[in-house]
Image (cartoon, rainbow, N blue to C red; front, side, top):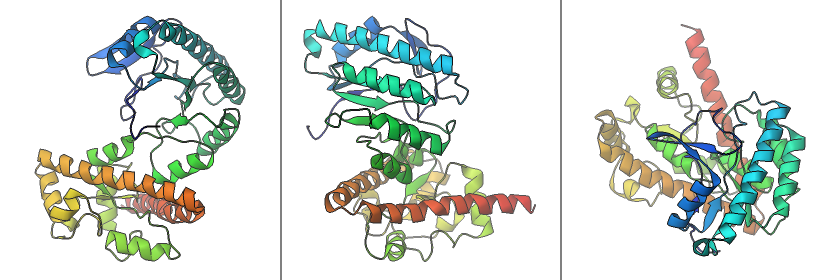
Length: 344
């Protein structure tokens, strides 16, 4: 596999899409210009222009709203398999796409039987990989997601990559890897940047995880040092903020002249301070997003480098323990925020 591939997906994972617009002949794609009905012929014509290395096949993914019936899940699988067959036929007739790899999409909502049928039938087609769709968002319970992933990946051949959309938090990534997922999107650092935050979690697994967190974040206790005022300020900003990041608009960073993360080698951390990025954010300077994006993407990609090292060294459990210790702080932070609001 080359170091990087051009992958054409259907939707922007960082932007929620409306539901209920797909039918037997087309899938609705949403962008800045509104809704576009995409048929298989129109979709494949676009692929001829892009000539991507990997193509996410057209599929009916309208099954993540949390209210999917068994009948709707079955329809989703039937439509997706039909779209896949049509796209494969059109690819075979296109000289421009002979080197492109078709990625089959596994649908079926939260209905196990339909998920398994989708996996088995898609695996029979000449696809180069599989996308586990419909696991993004909060509509599906975590236990249900993990159970479905376990069952679906067991039906897929091990020599072809498994992709997933909408999963980006470090603890969720590790849970998916344990269940056989190979490739993830990088929308999470983008979302972190959009809410004015910097990734600050530790991924350096070693025998003393707590010391690693303290050293990398440059503070004495990432989970317990927040005052009631800090917790309220963070929770008001965005309820999606996790303990894997720091909210740099908080006033406590106004006079913090240290780097975003101690030891980070990104351009932002090597040349600028938390106080400077805080100033850029509160004055709505565009440079804030540029610097945060530089840091967040390097930090996130370094996390995946650490995952590969841990898999190679058979130390994934140690990395998971470190990450999950930090994930627990997210629950504590939101719990404390709720208590603070309740005392008002």
